[in-house]
Length: 249
Image (tube, rainbow, N blue to C red; front, side, top):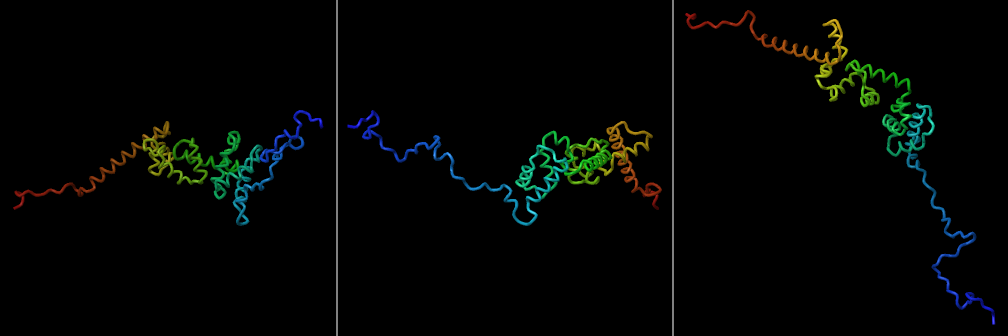
């Protein structure tokens, strides 16, 4: 009779469940540890490389490279991410909006060091343009402290002084006639300041004094013109005398 050790009796073995996982292979590695490879990932730029030779990606790449070149190709900036961001937002056809958006993706340090990049300008061009708009703003208002939002629109849209004047005439910060009354008359701070100097032989102490004087002068001129208009209908030589019945014989 064979010597059967406890637990080794074939008659006592438990049948294998077909649904049970297979026993570990060599080195205890399960069969499903390495799933079969799936489809290759699609190139995220593929949708933007269709069509003509000058594809959407070509345009986005040109803007992105110009933007980075303006700043001297700073380190730590992901050019590929910027390019894809432009495409995903459909900004590759508007360089103005594209530069504005790219600028928002920079760190605070790079923004402060490269304010010109927001407009796609070189440093020299930006300084020249900035000074020109500051001069125009000061000519119109008496202050060179042009607000950032006004400056951004003026540079982006390349306003003329006439366009800047029109904007100020319709902006509530500057359309108050008690503050800058000459704007509504199509005049500049410089024009009115020269008139003040011609009248008094000195410059006004501040824009507030000039505004008060200008409003007083305008009011006086209106009163004078009304008086002239009221007397212009009186016949020369005084009023006509109507004869009384006693005088008529």
